[in-house]
Image (cartoon, each protein chain N blue to C red):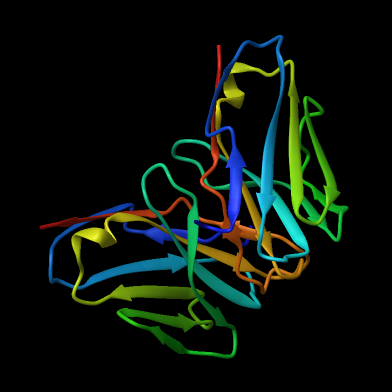
Length: 110
Length: 114
């Protein structure tokens, strides 16, 4: 299975700290995407990183991809209470299907 | 406003009822998706439509019947559901049908089967 798997399952930090979430997958991919889901809402796309890219930034978000280790990380710097959400990685390797992991539940304590 | 609107937001139905979920996107996208999200399980892709044509059906039971009359609207018709079908049903759209496109999600329909 090419399913992404996030680690840790849950993470609790103080506001202002950095949060790092990891994603591992099993087969070759074309790209990897990160999404955020607030409680009771749909998923929101954060970043897409292609297999030939190693790092990508968007505001306070930094995503890295290591295809040799089949892993990716999402770093949120200077976290805020509003960053409290579940974060999912999704891998794409062909056809129309994205395969999502179970997510990391991030709690940012004010 | 997410650009993808799902109705109803909540639905409670008995196992013998027939109901439909509706999804509408205002983003000019050509691909639309139905996902099932259950507690402690990964998001499960159910159906994919690209330019109104169904391109994926991930072994979904026939009690779920999708309909895509145009690129902006997607329905999921439900009949004779089981308690294990209780979940959050999410609709998404993307510019193209490829897996290299970001997907835009609605806020889902929370379905409870009595």
